Length: 180
Image (cartoon, rainbow, N blue to C red):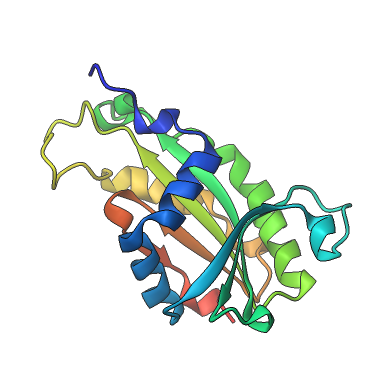
């Protein structure tokens, strides 16, 4: 366990990595039904003429086929699964408490009038202590998956917003019934 944990990367680094990774872009495009887009990161709300009263910036804004009318806004939050959480049955992911605020921010993006708005939960898994430490078996235990999904309370999510959960190997779980 001499190498640095993937969970040491800050949220901005994780977002930048994902959106610049060709296999992730392809998977995301497949889920959203788009093939090409332009991306912008960490855009201040005021720059788009939006109220600065709402918290935070827009983490990622993509325009499919460079069409601003179809802009998709992403509020990104990471959930960190420390190495010990994979081997200790009482271990839990970190940063779950930030998800309710992220749901509110995503709902505000949907209310703003973007073509689509998503909360993207980026699950960073430190699998260095995983008992089946091979390339294919570094995922989450089912109980940890349930813990993360349960922390994403959809009752307060705007009806025109959606949630995307990204885990290792760019597995994407999309709640399409929530996307407009």
